[in-house]
Picture 1 (cartoon, helix red, strand yellow):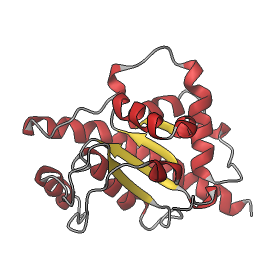
Picture 2 (cartoon, one colour):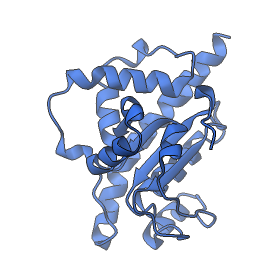
Picture 3 (tube, rainbow, N blue to C red):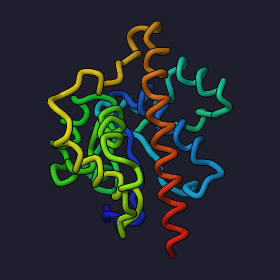
Amino acid sequence: MTNLSPSRRGILFVCTGNIARSPFMELTLANRLAGTSAVGLPVSSAGTYALARSGVHPEVTAELRNRGIDASDFTTTQLTANLILNAGLILTASREHRRLVARLAPERRNVTFTLRQFVRLIQLDPVGEVRVATDGPLEALAQLASRNRGLSSGSQDDDDVIDPVNSRRQFPAAFAAIDPAISLLADLITGLRDLSSRSR
């Protein structure tokens, strides 16, 4: 598989089975970007131990349906090094997933974060200081978050989004942890796309 050029790389979300957390992230972000300047941005997800040819977990399907999002066409994907190499920004559900991504493609560590870690790091620096990289907004955001790693002390337990699959009662908590991060991410991407368009 040929690696994509940096300008064509999108966002890759990663969890374990690719049936709950990462598809929820993918489909929610894609829905948020619809109708914006970033509507064409590639958004995908994969699992470190994906269930073969599976769909989205019923609890996630129901939640997405309540938001007007159709998950019926979703099919699970196994994480591979090529998927990582062809992503401009990799956001994982947990620190363990982040470690697994780094093992598969060490050269992409600088653009790999847990979803909640990324949001925490990106907010340590004023958004106004983000500059649109020549490769695009994802690279600009990844550069800012990576630069801010040194401003944050230690590993944060709340960087992980709990796996709700084995406990139905955990799904609301997982959705609540993901939602604000996806909202911020959508706003950042759209804002940088708009800035990039105006500067041309």
